[in-house]
Length: 306
Image (cartoon, rainbow, N blue to C red; front, side, top):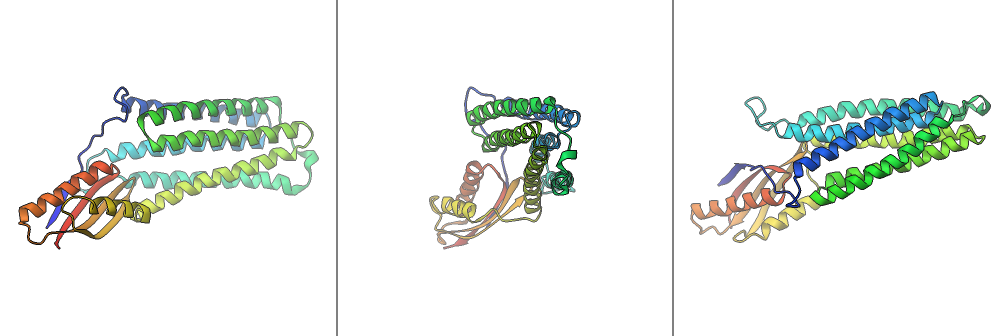
């Protein structure tokens, strides 16, 4: 016997006095607008101020816009209902967009690193352009702006209980540290060591490549029906095994589909139970799993006699 139901939508906000949808929209808006403004200013300052480090930092900030866009796209796409041509939904469109954007970021990061590394290996440091004051101002503005975005995002992320936005907040702080590296490199170049600007550029390039790697790895894992991991499956198995009238869990298969999870499960119940009672046990487990694990889009439960 198999229970196969569609997941019910809708979760109550973590804080009753907060409109979770409004908070999510505001957090996304602050992240996107803040990073676009910072990226634009830093790119201008890097070009006008002859600072490769600031150009790299601008691209690093732009990568935040890309990751936020991917997260926003994932939410929007996952809300589209399944149709005749896509009976399992549209979540993988997010993965395709992520692969495309990740490859663009990878190419840009490699290009930036190649220029910075070329300047370092050339040995002709006396010919390197010395950054001007506007690049230094941009580095300070980035540090202050990113720290403010970190504090704002972290406060509201905790208010609505969102691990994704908590992670986004810490991403803002890591960018502030990156801008500190820009500040040191630009300041050192202005004080007489022009190669430090290129050194800072290469270091920030590594941050860009790390973001690109994370985006590409996550997208590929979700497109290849990767399992959710031993820790997740152990937690899920234990949760189901603890439900009343479930004798044991005989089989569990999980797979990631875009940003959601599909589950196939076999549970054992008392073989002497009538069909209706066995079905009721499976249906109860089904509903509780989808309530407790909101990332689960679809679960199919098969009942075996114990």
